[in-house]
Image (cartoon, rainbow, N blue to C red; front, side, top):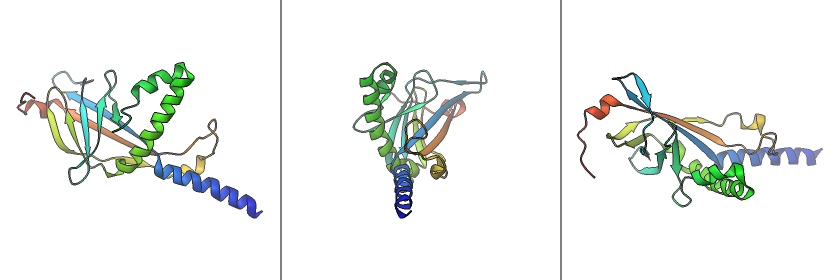
Length: 177
């Protein structure tokens, strides 16, 4: 009986540790154009994620096709190429898993500290925009099963939605880089 309790406690302990040290961060980016009442996809948007003192914690870049931000790991990059090749080969899957492992452990170190962002587009630069990051980790023990086809390893999930308003950019004077 005590062996079963130790095994269960170990599995739950490992799941809890993994959810504290590994995270995923979804960043949604929207650009509102009030003239035509639409939301656009902006190519080449750079995002700086800042803490309360204005220090850059991480950087990201927008996807060219969707309003999604790819996070850029300081050593392994944004994992986009590995992600795109994952469905087509075992090598691609291994590259994606390795890259995501680095990315997920890195995200866990800073995502909960984000309080402001800088948004750099070809139309304007918005600095120190206050943001609220949503965090989810409360249900890890309910679904954590150490098997990749049932539950997989638990992660802490962060999410953030950033909206840049055309009116905000219209009032800025752009200077050439």
